[in-house]
Length: 322
Image (cartoon, rainbow, N blue to C red; front, side, top):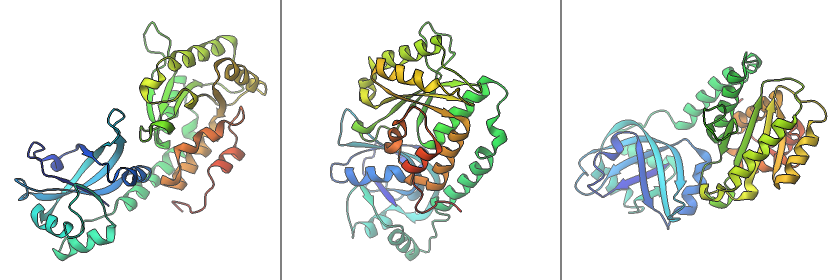
């Protein structure tokens, strides 16, 4: 569990609503960043100093980001769940027996023991709530009928939702009324470690047996060149830019067009059909936080992402759900 303490009176009532908490965490940066793979996680926010008479709060951590301009700074985005019937001062006394740090990782069992001393049960764990959420998505997203949208707009929306579920930060840009041409979807892995951040440029095609024509090939090259000119400002190295065509299905020679684009732009790309996208999502739902986005580029070794590749890159050792 993550424990977050504030001693600064300027952060009044910070733990009593959804928000973002900044920490200078030189001493715990590496440890806290590891937990970004296991989100969401339970947390407790409490006060010291002038606000220590306030109750502690049960929170849910949604994001842990490293400030790219100040590498030792961590920003933690959290959701307020509820207040617990324990004054911050009393909780701080117990926690300080182990550490006086403002940001601390502590085993759930140790935190529960402290709370139990005061007769408090923190309630349902995030893990059990996460499993319930995954079972909901299991019914919704793993239903094949969900993958037969009636229009390209619906197909694009479904695709963006799936990549959001995979853990990417998604921007749907295509078909906006702008002079500059944009790809349908841009997906960024969270900016946790600058060197490993990924950008996917996705072109969605609501077609079966789709073949990349000359216009679509030229458009993808433009998307890649435009992004490479500014990509490092977004915390992504040029070699971590990947492109992807997603369609209901592809003609057998489409991979040759992917090869041409890869050579001319010095970028890795691939084809991904609807059924394999569905299989990729199923992997995520069954692996949970062990579905590491750092491994995602390994899927681009060939020009088409197949079930065999997905199985090889994302091996299920311990299933997250039954």
